[in-house]
Length: 352
Ligand code: ADP
Ligand code: MG
Image (cartoon, rainbow, N blue to C red; front, side, top):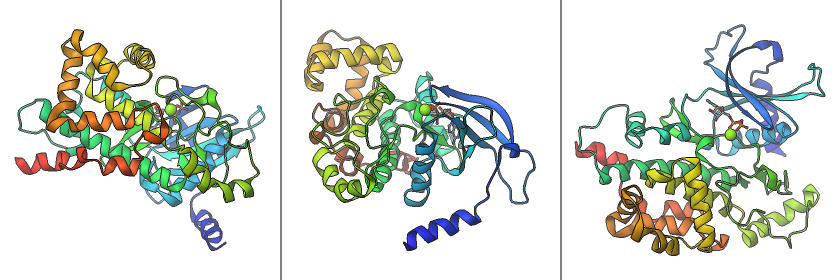
């Protein structure tokens, strides 16, 4: 109950906004469930507010506001900084949910991995300076390791809060220029299992390019849509039984794969990879056996990178991308994996 009062008081003292407070800027994205704009405030308040981002969302907006409020209180650093959300009902339509975040930066991980410079473009963004070291696999591995650590750290925050994202992909990972780290965005498909919000998986929300093979987060034996109090009582057990967080781990593993293999960074290649992996019954080792003997220099470079330090990167990848959810590492488990023992970019800057 105290938590409820605290949340209420905190909300009272936060600025509230209405439709007319915003001046629309550039359109940043448009999905099936909403449109995202960069916006600024019509009247700049005394406190200095930077640029903001507005999402005008349809029916899933209510859930997305709930998720963002929860993240704000429980694991603020995992996701983009949420400012405010409200139902805008003056619109002619039945009403839209408006969600406001602080503008974190121009680039998502999807933009960054498409660059020929990747991962060196990210190195400069994280360190703020150009490294005076020879380019090569070792250095690329350190940068990718740092990005993976940040993604897993953010995921661990969400999962520890009881939230499964369900749409982890490079397009939903933003580089925060303020903190020089990667953060997660787009909680529109997320599920909060502790209180049963968005409990029934909306499988049509899932992006087939990054979705784990189980599709449904909970097994089919799970009773569907229990009322909220029942879900609260049951969910820690269900969490243990079904390990729904491992769905995000699979997606994060595919991001790791795309960073390691330049040839798998574009959509068509990823779709083709998914087909090949399915044919190998989701066994990465079997996939490797089938492609390595006849693969081009592009794929070979990825294997070389993952084989560094006794193949510790490959070991991590194969512990994330697995058919059975319970055989995948958790976010915490992945962070404790020996792949992260070396200090990544920090060690690099000390070496100078
Ligand atoms: P959807 O995928 O439902 O259209 P997202 O929440 O993923 O909506 O946002 C769409 C795009 O808007 C993102 O890919 C990103 O480019 C941009 N964006 C979203 N939130 C922020 C933010 N806080 N700061 C900067 N850009 C953002
Ligand atoms: Mg998105």
